[in-house]
Amino acid sequence: VQLVESGGGLVQAGSSLVLSCLASGRPFDNYDMAWFRQFPGKGREFVGDIDWSGGTTTYATSVKGRFTISRDNNKNTLYLQMSDLKPEDTAVYSCAARYWSTPDWMYWGQGTRVTVSS
Image 1 (cartoon, rainbow, N blue to C red):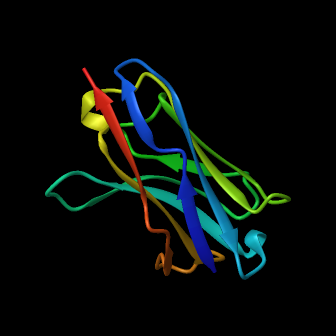
Image 2 (tube, rainbow, N blue to C red; image 1 turned 90 degrees about the vertical axis):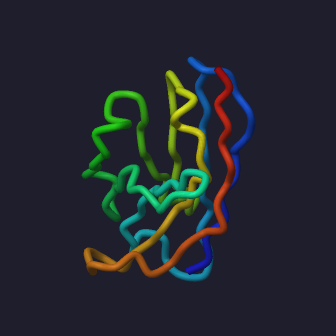
């Protein structure tokens, strides 16, 4: 499955932003999906995930209550709605896919950069 993120940009602290991840190549509803982020000069951090049906989501503590993950299986699209953004949310955000509850996130997008100014 191929994944392409979009929606990143430069925003001010306190703003909201929605990222999208368009999937192609395989049936989208065969895959659990996730968002990760990578801070400048640091490793990748799990943001949250959503199961294939959209019925179950989990979030990292650092974003819980501010970020919402959703998906539209008819549009083959995953979303990350981010609100009350903070400068520490500045990172490259990537989506990932894994086939129905398999353990490893096998497919990755190229990422979209989000910069939050104070």
